[in-house]
Image 1: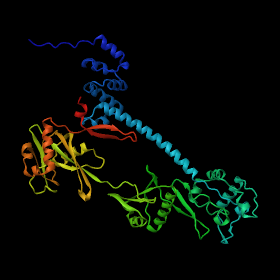
Image 2 (image 1 turned 120 degrees about the horizontal axis):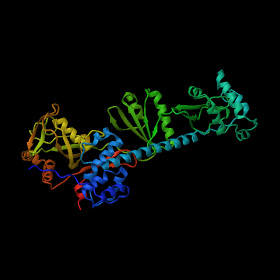
Image 3 (image 1 turned 120 degrees about the vertical axis):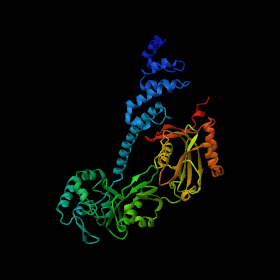
Image 4 (image 1 turned 60 degrees about the horizontal axis):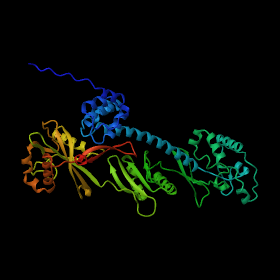
Length: 516
């Protein structure tokens, strides 16, 4: 007699009431599984998050994980889902909450940037305070009485018209010039009126004549018209540092290096145009003097490789090497007196090892063409170095694929070690990862791998050199305990950062964490 499947019974009235009142639900720890599946499928993301937070005594992941995946896909798109869908260690609720936090942090960061830009511009305008003194007669004069030479606009009609306009708009009063005391006590121009006049000028005139207000008649140092400020900016890209020579009457100005402020009271310079050392050194010295006057501390100079002709000049000015990358050299300079507090260069390299075990209790092993095991005949598990910006779990999967051609899935970090005086004297962090094989056919890397195979675990651990190698022998013992469910390693958990929109991975022992 053939079996007849029983029809699924309809939802009872209590479940229907719960669905109608889903927005008021809290702890659902005692509700049966089928009822929960019916009720929670009617929740919004906020309602589902509230219910999970209230139901502390019960793990709702088996029911809600697929719901959170659907929320995530609708909110952020399928492409974003595909990036993380293979990593089964993540709960979709955690990922959804982390992404929402990322969006909030991104919006907050944009708001903070707007506020900082406003404050920076406000401070920049305040720092451009210029007050100079002079009389109407000296304003109209184009002779420097001390040097007895003509300064100013010469026959330039445009500048003469501009000067007359300045005189009209500023309403220069008649001031007696009988004594220096009376002269200096009656300034004809103050900051608001002067900058109102500046704003009315053509931007093109300012850009093409940045020294317009440094050498006009009656405003030069020789005619007792004094600049009270050391520096001002004609435009966002043209900054000048001005100082009075102790032996000369002219105001000297040198273009400064563009720099961005860091978060620790220093500046970051990145040279973006070619320059010879004769031109560069005065600019660098003036920039350092300006940063010192502003109270800056550390100077980070990022020198692209195409400007390497300036390395010697920068070092002679007191800069030191910090680190180098393929496309640039980073140098540093500490302005205050005393020992610097700049962070040193990277102190560690990060390596990974991958233990891959199939269902036949065979471990994936290789023999290397290079390194300390070259020519020894020893079989070892694949190892490698984590790339910049790469997660440890992804690095392990990548290295196995590159060396053996086998696709794998990350399971856990079994253990990690730290050693010192490794490559170039740096320290080394080595993370041993357990991976699950997804494919089994081996295609070894010809450049680095001599041979690769699946090897019985007992034969691998019985190798004399492996048994004598303290680190590898200890790892093998832990691995066997892990296979026997007597030891568990570390799993990655998504975490967010309140200071940025980055999502981080925290590795922890979930089994012990969830143990009651």
